Amino acid sequence: MSVAVRWAALSAALALCGCQSCPPYRAGWYLNDAPPAAPTVFLALLHEGQTPTTVKRVILNPGTEGASGWSLGLNRTLPTGGLLLLPASSFESDGGPFGICQLPVAVRIECTAGTRQFPVTGTLPNYLHDGWLQACSR
Image 1: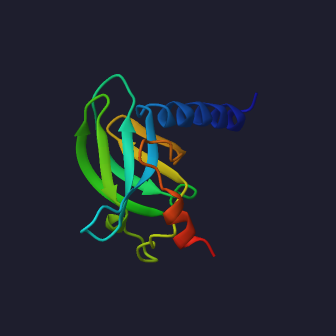
Image 2 (image 1 turned 90 degrees about the vertical axis):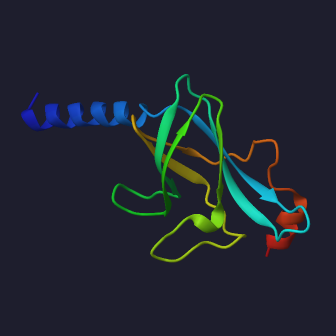
């Protein structure tokens, strides 16, 4: 086996370990449309790991390494079972904020232990309801 092949295999193994080092999370969109406030969309992150962790950055629709989606820098420690609600309007990108009808479907979390990428499944208790879907459908 050549040195280049060995290096590639080692790099891939280390990358896989790094991706799995951040604890598991579940993500979903939450619509707060209770009067009198204007409707607000939140990304809800539920920490499903076994130990507390510090979330450094959340990136929505992350591209390849170095490419940016919408991101939000944080420095919040979440206990096991902790829920973090992040307003959609707080995420930033070179292309500007996304609108209420443009909800990303993937999220990458950067934490003290590494990174983890996973889908936004919408399975949290208050997922987006039919009224939102009707308002945003084309």
